[in-house]
Length: 467
Image (cartoon, rainbow, N blue to C red; front, side, top):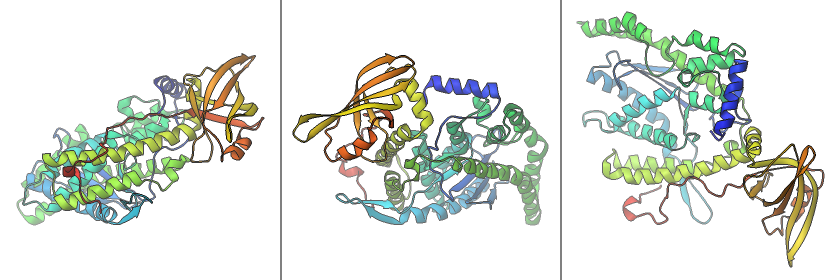
């Protein structure tokens, strides 16, 4: 989240007082594709990393794969193979369809972005454990398992580096980014509880408690395991004939299908709620070149190498970090400018400004070089916490101003600003923007971002085919 700790605490207090979800943002900060790939993993409680079932789909229809005995090695590899084939049928064509972008330096990127949706953070953790197991699968296992494991690591690694990256969308985290719920962290990580709280204003906590006994994460519930699941698994293992094992397998599948289906439908419902929030322009624009370039590189890596090894991890990590860094800059900068809630919070902290232009003048510094000086009236008391601000306007090229003075004026504050740019061609546009009586908004100039130090000259051993 981009909100300060104080702002989040105030929103949480309001949510508990109202016993209802409170919107924490004015816009949506994540991309939600029209038909993302939803993957619902379910593990066996008490067995770390033991897959029990997978649900998948790109719409209302859900496919299901069940591992009737999660402690049997052959059954596990059979289930992972089925899931891997479905995953690769979705992502491989996206990774291989390339176009060249850029005028001066051509870059190969995928034609479209890919988005994997997982219901909860616990589900993502289970997938990471399975992906690490899949990329080191023994030789007798279908190679598609290693390939699918490599794809899962791509999505999971990007999300770990930048929570607001849209390649992997974890529904509970996305909901928590845009709403503050009157729930604890543990309750908020339960997908069914989070959605119930959103659907029942004024009774959010009661609604969440009503569904907490149902599986809403990545594991089954102990009472369900003891009374129903374990007897069904034992019956499957004790079946003597193939017909008997097939019948007992259907029994296990009948027990697990409603659980996986409920989580899958909750993912669909959560995505619809997110789509209803107007997105910031960076989410709408088809400019995900950094993510698409990383996707193309990873597809090439999987095609050429076939599997992972310790010697290859550096090359994979360096290219992955480069793509995530660019995505972080794009989304964070746009959210600062376009989200009215974030801007209001930043204004309270002195890192943004919204007011009315009282006076504006152009000061000639040198022939054909002008700087604007203006006075903006702000309601209430205001004090700048930074020196330079960026004007919020429709042009992609930013205009910057510096604070040169702040004075109280009754119930208002007068802020004196001076343009920090040498304006020539933009003067006519700025004349209209800075005209007296016009509203104006400014945000803190983002001059630095988190950086991972991608080397300017990539060593030859890290280079690879991008096409």
